[in-house]
Length: 214
Image 1 (tube, helix red, strand yellow):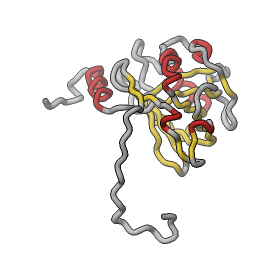
Image 2 (cartoon, helix red, strand yellow):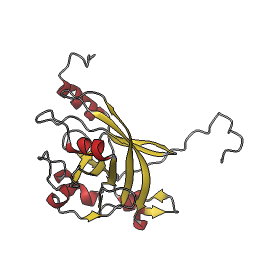
Image 3 (cartoon, one colour):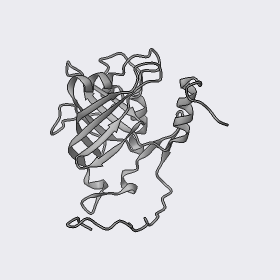
Image 4 (spheres, helix red, strand yellow):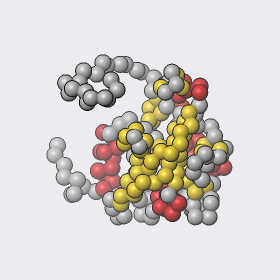
């Protein structure tokens, strides 16, 4: 079947995209509004860009109920800061609670029974129960569309890292069995990282640049 996304309802396009592009990592974004009130919300349109400078992205869509702007996008536009908290199996239920569409001012930390931890380099708090946090400053916000089904791309520079030693091995590697991350599938479905296999990457055919570490 061949489909033209311009002729389909955007809700149908969303279902096809989210049912095919998976599993998706979850960026649990904490932010502050202009009055210093905390907000916490999960985004499965989330990923990393590069490591120098350390850069991540997440994509807030327009709110489904009324087509309005999500609090997280409003907050990062106003303050230029946010924290990415990594979601584990143990935090799945709490993460799901923070996905609630609520009026501005609701403290999702309290709503989900979570605790705030102070950040080192930015003002928004971290989720104390999460084992990994990326403190970020907004580098750029690209608005794709503010209409129904639209959204924005938030690009953040990671300015500080927190990693719990219990999920760290060798000083710079994450132990997946200790972290127990989850991924987002379609609808209300999620997945655990329980069935692992490894592939050896083909050796590069491009000569290494002089002076570059092997």
